[in-house]
Image 1 (tube, helix red, strand yellow):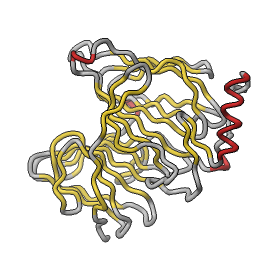
Image 2 (image 1 turned 90 degrees about the vertical axis):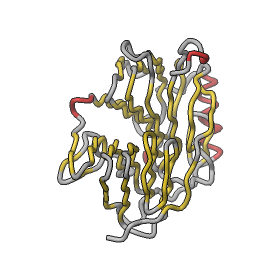
Image 3 (image 1 turned 60 degrees about the horizontal axis):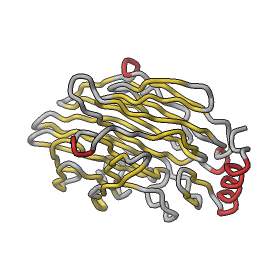
Length: 280
């Protein structure tokens, strides 16, 4: 295997979304589509008392994407236009395919023990052929997510495979890899990434050497595609989300919570919102 090098790292920017939610944003949807098939990555934490009461994300629409929520502390109460109601608790994942259209609400709640809310949201693009497909909702409970312990690494596998053990999220168009990787001090982790697939690592605890470059939290690492594996080592311990997937190589037009392939499709979406025909 040949280890990929680091193209560059991204320091998250603070942004406000929803009803006044403070987020760290590493990736935002852009027409340049540099991280294809990934569109957005947010790190949310409501742990500073100066932020005031937790607000959240009242009912809002999506079209043309998968939205993925992964909780580490606290919880999120979810409901949507498909009739789903769910509570996403620590270690749980919500994988929602918006397809032709869905309305949903996500309201965070603080941990009863720590008082914190901590987690991530990832948007994964859908190919043009699936953007107007039926919406769906997957509730992935923590108990169903396998953990592989190997050579000082503890890996929670949401999507993808390690040592023959597969994560519960399958049959996604982008063939995504989504893993929570925690390395003990003095350990190393090497993982194969298919040639041509986009590869990212969001470092949120500790620090490590990513392809020989020192990276400390909190940063997103964007790898070159000059190899077929990624290598991470650490002297003091590090935790990161490993994200990879097959790009669709299609033009995109992002507009708020919608990501389509043409301006005409965005205009049609807005028209449907206005005339009340968005939800079929």
